[in-house]
Every structure is written in C-alpha cells, then in structure tokens.
Image 1 (tube, one colour):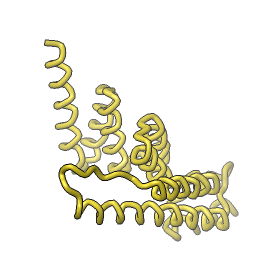
Image 2 (image 1 turned 30 degrees about the vertical axis):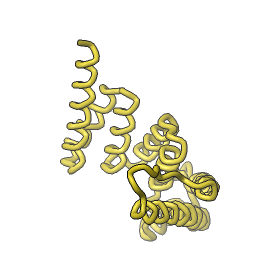
Image 3 (image 1 turned 120 degrees about the horizontal axis):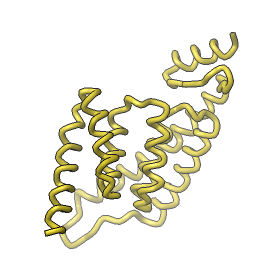
Image 4 (image 1 turned 60 degrees about the vertical axis):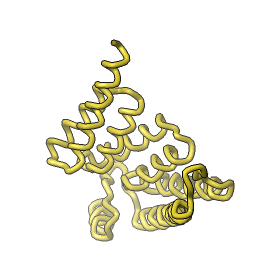
Length: 180
C-alpha cells in the first residue's frame, strides 16, 4: 500500500515518478531529487542566458565560447543532475538536461545518446527527446537508428517528425554524393 501512496503523491506533485513496488522512491527522496534538478537547471539557464546576451553583441569574426566560470557552473549543474537521478531515477527531465550538458559542454555525443535513451526508457513518448536523440544519431551517422526514431515520431504524430525526416534525407544525400 505504501508504494502506491508514494506513487500517487509523486504523480500529483508533478514529478512523474515511475516507481514500482519493488523499487519505491520515497516522497522525501523525490522532493530532494527535484530540488537538485532545479539547482542544476538554474545554473544551466543562467549560462544560456549569458550566452544569449553575448550573442546579441557578437560579430561575425567573434566566436561565442563558454567561459571558464561557465564550464565550472556546467560541471556543478551536472553534479546536481546526477544527484537528482541517484535520488529518483524515474524523472526523465533530469536525464535530458544531463544529456544536453554533455552535448553542449564537451560535444560528447555518446554520453548524450546514453542519457537521452535513459529518459526514453522512462517515457517512450517524450517526442522532444526522441527528436533530440534522432539528431545525435544523425551526427553519429547512424541513419538506421535515426529512422527508427523518425518512425516513432510519426506514430506519435509529432511536429518534430518533418524536421528529422529532412535531416535524414540530407545525410543520405551527403553519403550518396561522397560515394560518387
């Protein structure tokens, strides 16, 4: 009975928990996890805001770069997200922000792919993440896997399907041209 009550409390609190009776997440852990998640997101949002403001004054010859402090903040945000996941491994958005941090900070597409996939294990219909993972798969030139994500987006009737379809077609065209 307690796992059911915990699940209901988490669901009603907006934490979309997917705890099962064999792997319960306590209310306290869920709350602590969400607080860690918010701390991480707050740091990342501040970095994005700084970069957005810098882009307004950027010129064609000035490349936007993440500062040393922003890298430290990103790493701190990542620690908060990892802590959040350790407390509640059933919250897909923590994996999404963690994936984004690997993509944005180090361009580590394998870690990005791993964390997007974990988010999709929890919520297979999360079309924003299916689309993002599809983009990573294209960058890794894994067309067949990207096409599976496209099929899923089409089955969900997602607005993201057309953009991914175009990216896959472009990759196929590039491959064809490189063979000629």
